[in-house]
Image (cartoon, rainbow, N blue to C red):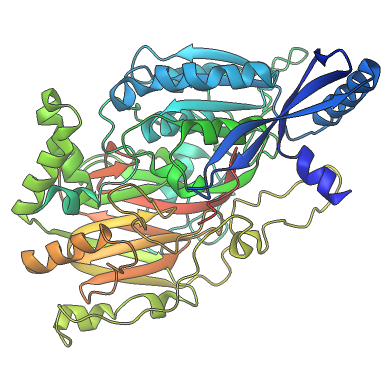
Length: 547
């Protein structure tokens, strides 16, 4: 029985056409998936032929297998697909044309939308009614990480019920935020130069020159419920009624990689292959993914307090990360090569930024980072390396991600928001000084230039961010640090000028007038932000990397 169940889990579809093999034999085809011999994380379709002398017996077997497939609840029936025609040197349309027959053969209905401009996917999903959205089992991005980020923000901007991130005592914006957003206080200020070396630090979508999203403001919304952008109304009362909210167990997101880096796909499946991703979507694979909620309080020191919410699936970075994206805007005519050029230019400037960062401490914080005081006072040489705890890499069926991932249900009608962390007796730790960069990785951010990612041990759904604070250091040491990302098996986070904190939330304050962040490869101007990890906020059509 177990072997039959395992076989059915890999069946794509059954060809019901009874074909006469000879005068004495009839057959039908069963299309399944199997692992590639060369790449353990890659799946390929294959075909098995079954035959019998009696055509009615063949028909009975084929219909029985088809019925078993149709009874699998996790398999999607209807999908909305956004295809980016320009990303990855035009690979979006080519990849969709390649995998579209697989969806047709598996009887998965697809509504295909070819994006025509920046923000097209965001506008579509932000304005679609929840009643219309409920007709689909998920949304698929055929493009790069930037298109996925646009889809993510379009869905979550008006449908995410997660509260604002907690902030340290004395941060000072609770009263202003209460007026803007109308949320409750729970006592925590919370509511319910080689180019390869330099560019290894540019995660998700930063090499995709065609993926852009608008800034997302919640200034016109009430709380973090349904925004005025979303026309969801109850036909009987006329009141706004949220029909789709997140976390959401049935609605999933998918990516068919077609961008220039595809770090989200590499981090969640281990394989940058369009066919593999399409097969995982068709079979209805499911896994939870943490999302970073980024709240900008002020865009510049003199600006008014206006909370603006963005979501990032992989990375949020300041300093070196943000300046590379901003510098690249001056060289758009160069295409994707502008990131190599801009990265080298920003690296050679070697600029540091005065900032303050407060993060929530957890029991592992001290073991992951050098003492900030020792770094500042140069008690130890900056070029020395320190040992770190053994890495536990996130894999398929990861025990770390599964731990406490299923909250107890209080009643039949009430499902707790598992993405919202309850902070008991929070302890804030401040780190301040001159930083070359400040970054927060949600996932490992694996890519072809950084085979292990920015943080190899980052998990997909454990509810933590990996905060990376790179303090000012001599240029050769910074280059040495960057080159470690390009080497598989190395550890670039062991330098004494590098602080690595595993945290659930942090707050950042800078006095620079032109402070910019890189959120999944897109610019976001902000001098004061609060960021938190929303555990398992969305579900993906994926099962985790095998290796």
